[in-house]
Length: 183
Ligand SMILES: [Cu+2]
Ligand SMILES: [Zn+2]
Image (cartoon, rainbow, N blue to C red; front, side, top):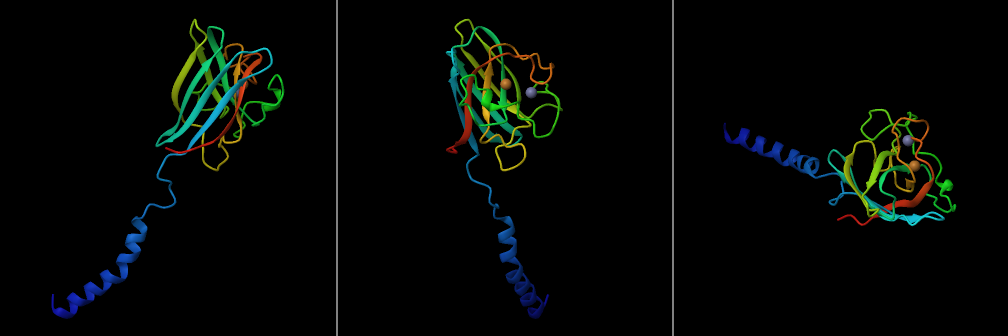
């Protein structure tokens, strides 16, 4: 390579490298994962309360729930379409969140309501904890986003098949899902 060729190569590098550097800069991806939270409040005549958090991960959204005041056993646990827990029986939260127009099912089903998180299981003291990674829920600004909707806990178990809502009975707690501080 003579000196002319060498300086030509150097020139090309100088022209191209700023674009290369820009392309390697991470886009608008926030440094901390998106996080959301719902604080569950009891409906009329209920003593059920708790907290549900949603944290964005590489392969889905991690759901963590801690709920107290339940009767022992399984209780339907869903995201409902409206972030409105104002009615005494939480009927204001509407139906299961179903932006993809699928039938009701369990959390592992390929075709399900986006809001179908299955059941939480309470122990003898009435406390339930749940942690799993959901593959249909989104926290970003798209059709499946659960921000501004609600989490509802039911009096009975969700059978994961009855339409439209798993035959899980009355609503015993409700909480609106809002953005939380990412950390
Ligand atoms: Cu429900
Ligand atoms: Zn459903």
